Length: 96
Image (cartoon, rainbow, N blue to C red; front, top):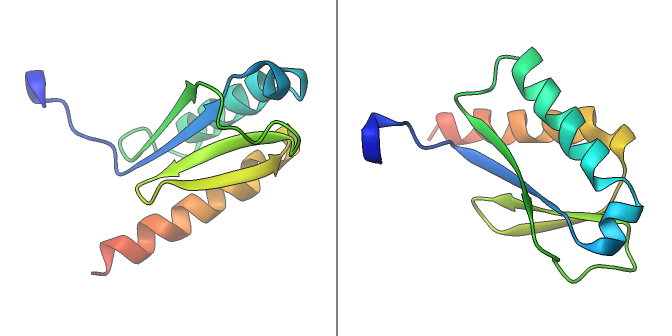
């Protein structure tokens, strides 16, 4: 990467489409960003917003990469559990 920046191991892209906004996707994204900082994961995990993921009737949607796994029916209260799942993924990948 340019400037020697390290690529993140995992990205969680939170939908910022109109329906997800109504379900408080910004609150979920901000909570995840705070937890990544608090838990010392800023080198491994990136939280970002993205365009509509086409899951408008299923609550907040997010895409977990690598793997392009679509997560749906998320709520801000799920932030801790979601990040714990990402940590498990990171640990599994580091063993290989």
